[in-house]
Length: 553
Image (cartoon, rainbow, N blue to C red; front, side, top):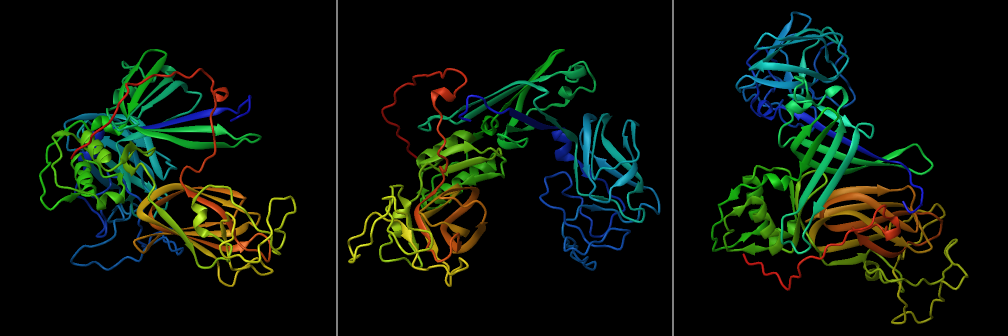
């Protein structure tokens, strides 16, 4: 990025043309289904496919991915394995009706996840008599761009499966399909974000993209135009890519997850504008009440988000320990969240995945300890970023004679320079320890971080295991073995934890100690941007001066 000649940059946009009303109200009509079938969740997001092993042709696997089918029971309690037909499709054609439970409507395309054993020949029939024939299908997740017009239901008629002696299975259905656009289709794009540094306003994100209108695909007067099926609130994923130097590989970074707000087109271009999730949270919250016993801000924020219809969000667990008795004023949902964020010294924002986030604007106090260190080690110093001193020792390939190390004094007690952590354990000829050195970081409150940074001394570890805990329970175990350098940055999402244990299991050189000079959470990049890195002149705006902000609740 610092070179005068840079590699090519890329953009990728994906959004689904989904009929949201049909998606929300559609239901499967009664039919011939297996007793363990579950069609209730076909139209919602599913995280995984659960499959029962059955005696069908070329179907059952013994790799641990399938479940044993329980006997039929009176409680009808089974895993959600999606819709499963009652009979083999080979015995007779199988029909399935999807009631839209709306007035006669149009929608462009349908996406059905059939799984590995998909139908090869089938028809889609609308209530108006329109029939779409699908023959020789080869897709487990079938997608069609055909427009179904003026229909109140969709009937699927199946004639032949990939494996002849097998049942029909459907894991999910979406009324619409996804579109993906790359550099060759994108003429221009812009993303503007606004965040008040003092939390005076709700954050905003605006995105606009101009696409080439190939073959009048986005023209309003085209009955099959995609723009006729765009709806306010449809989701758009934005990714940015950069071609790595001296390589053909493109590294993709998620830019944002936004909601469509408006669109327009002419004969040459189509413009789609998107915005953040807070713009749709303008309904009023009026359930604020006085609570004499006090109520945690965590519960208040959760109630507001639930009342706004959101289920995907993150609330800093520190808010569980902060309380208020006062009622929230009658304001918009997004403004109520901003009030809570300000009162708790937090930042209200939208993540790159499109979810609401209330996160502390400061890092909680932390303390470091270990299971064994030398007399001249000071493990508590690793949490500050000062330059550390190192003492020469007889460890393998450790000591340097360039003036960068010190002789260890005879009387170490109270006479130690500014050192970091030096383990008491020494590795053997294989670089392994009898008892692995462990550094423990304990925070005063649980929180999440993206990334950690290590700065080692002249001795490097060869393997590290990081374990995080929250209230004594293991949250995650993450192993690091490749490319351990003197300054090591690990880019990884560490979910809420109050304790992190860093276990060093091996050294790069035999007969060595672990020397850790600095450790930090988050803000793990040393990238800087100067004026010479910019492709255009920066624009400075002087904001109104604010002397103080008083937040009362």
